[in-house]
Length: 154
Length: 293
Image (tube, chains in turn cyan, orange):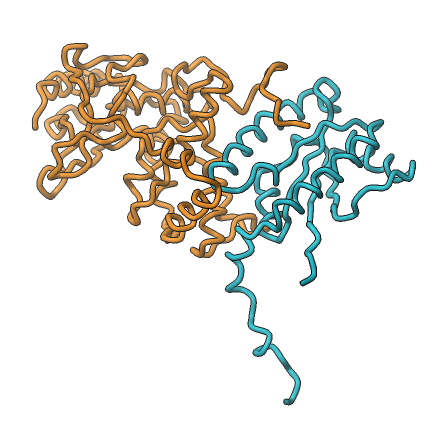
């Protein structure tokens, strides 16, 4: 059986972690390629529905990247985000989703190396935990059995 | 069971309505069947005979402040009086905190409460009343009753949150999928909630559609997930959502758990101080951040 690769969605702040991830690329730091990046204007922009949607659509983990406290381009967006994500993380744990599947990192534009390390660590964690089955099983009914969608003549 | 607070309540209501201090009074009245209680909306002092007060007055009448006709009245400069228990007053305080209603637009008739019952046949107090801290309200314009009228609420304190926390991860998920798969998306929990006052709820938005509208497990989990997040640090644990639920889902469990976590980590309890800033509106440099790598 082929081992499935983790699928990770990252929401990165335009002013810090997104540039940090970019720096990791321009300085040719190798890191795992299983991460899909979504650029957002601020970590305070990230609504809990974004994270829910990522899980529903098959993400095994979500990484949030924001500015270090005090560095927010909008003064306090990351501090608002910190409260929100504390609560969200508690909710996920209470619902029965591993809290490791929700990672928050403060990563500045100069910390390409930290970003690469974070991605590698999260990938390793998700490989250990396996895919997030909780949400996948709920959408199974949407999947039409292969037999029925076959358009060939036989 | 009639309470001896009924007559003082009626007298106070008549005084408020006849003097023109308030335009509308929301209270409890007798419903059609048995001992059932329903909300009544009074405009004339002659109607105050309809008011009742007993241990079946479970409704949180603060919900109606954010609905018509009260909403139009309080926004248009009128005044509304509400008969409210300590738990309901926490909801009113939260509405004041969130600038939904001005303090002087609402006249709070605080009731000394000795617990309410949900079930007609049951002699047991509602489980939410066990361990109540606000039997004697802290915020009111008029207080009906005194310390002497707050009987002790009997029964074991509820430990449903502890029971979930004692489960391992997969058992928790199993519990929630079992409970939430029953949800029929009637939105009774949202309608009964004093904190769910958005004119347009995110569950009704379809461009883009964030919350799956189907009453399938996926849509149900999405709905209760976002409801819990929107009530975190705001839920006053009045339990009206669970009481309204026709499928007997413990819908208040998620928001109650989050409010408890907020209280533990941030020392913030919703609705205790109408002057305080709402939880998600402010932040501190030293907020917990150990979970951030």
